[in-house]
Every structure is written in C-alpha cells, then in structure tokens.
Image (cartoon, rainbow, N blue to C red; front, top):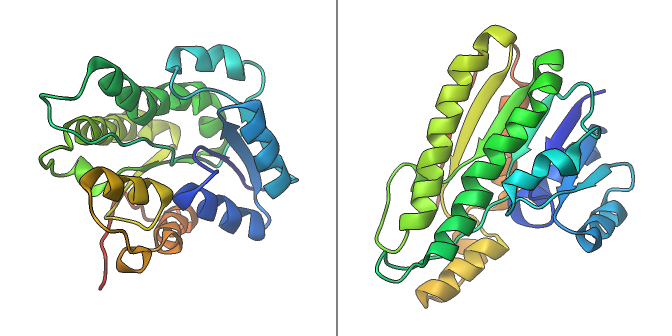
Length: 228
C-alpha cells in the first residue's frame, strides 16, 4: 500500500490532493494544526491517520510526532503555506517569522523527521512552491523569500539524498483558485474571480505525475502556469 504524509489538507491544493490520493486507495497521514482541525480531517478522510502538529512552531514538531511516524513513506507532500503581503517598510518581525516558519522551517524539520521512513520506501518529497519562488515582486518580499529558501532546501536535499533513493520535486504553480488566493486578492484590493486562475485539480495532476513516474526517469522541477 502506498503511504503519503501531507500538510495543508484542509483547503485548496492540499484538500484536492488528499481527495485524489484517497479516491485511488492510497494511505494518508495528515498533519492538522489543532484537535478541531484533526476532527474535521478525520470526518473527511475516515481511513486516514491524522496527527496534530503546529507548523508555526517548527521546534515543536519532533515532540509532537515522536513515535507516530510510519515506518515507510512513499512521499512527503508539503502543501501548507501562508502569505502576508506588504512592503518591507511595513512588514514586522512577527509576519516574517510566521511566514518563514510555516513555509520554510517547518518543511525542513518535517522532512528531517520523515527521512528514515522515506529512505525505507525510496520515497519522494514534493515541495509545492510558487511562482514567487522564482521571481520576487513588490509587496511579496517575505513570501518570496520563504519560497526562494524552499527551492534551495529542495535542491540541497535532492543532492544529499540521491544515494539513499529519495527523490525530490519542486512544483511552482502560478496563481491558483484557492482560499489563500482569495485572501491575496483582498490584500491587493483586487476583485477575485476563481475562474480566472489555475484550478487546484490541475496542480494536483502535476503532483501525481511526479509521484507516479517510473524510476527510470525523474521530475525535479515543474512549473504550472495559467492556460487562459
């Protein structure tokens, strides 16, 4: 049975990915921030294992997950993320810390904790990055910095773990119709039309392609752009 550890399953790309994996009968280990969120995920995915851990506090993950990691993982899927926009002149230390914790430090720590299980299954780590991880725009400094860092983490991890059979993929979606994107539009003061952007299922298709690729080939970086 194929087993996946997934963050961000409560909405957007993560929810669509969890649903797709669940529909095809794969085993899910889902990370929830709170007991309430865990109950909600448990209702949505009754066969899943749901673990409570706070990605805003990466230093707490080891204690939260101690003894609860599966012995083998076919993938770790980092989908959770936060985005606070604003010019450097206005973003405070708290916003920087939260962004870097959730988008970069937590994926690094969770990957570290999962590596024995990933090595056991010769699994794959998928980092859902962003177009902001390739180019930074005004007001996107904190988010882009976290995603540039995530790209560096993926590149280093790929080189380090190749000999252990662990593969690493970064996926760079453009603007995708998710609750986060709706909030981004609110921060930008712009009208939001979900139909104007990539649908979460399209990003999921790209992720599944990486997961299902035969081992004679590899996908290291995938860019997903709006087709309209």
